[in-house]
Image (cartoon, rainbow, N blue to C red; front, side, top):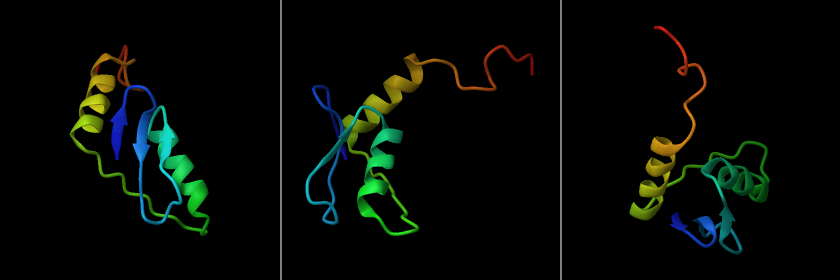
Length: 73
């Protein structure tokens, strides 16, 4: 899987007819699961360097994770 600034995350697999695109990793996972159809699909996303960099950038500049913002612990 890679990241294309114009299209978002792009996933490819031999099990899919065409590449799948989504704006988030969660969205990409959901689309792949829906396309693969069996009752229990196990999706493992292997990120290339560009996708890892984008994921990390979003983590660092995004909103705080639930449960951690404003806690005194």
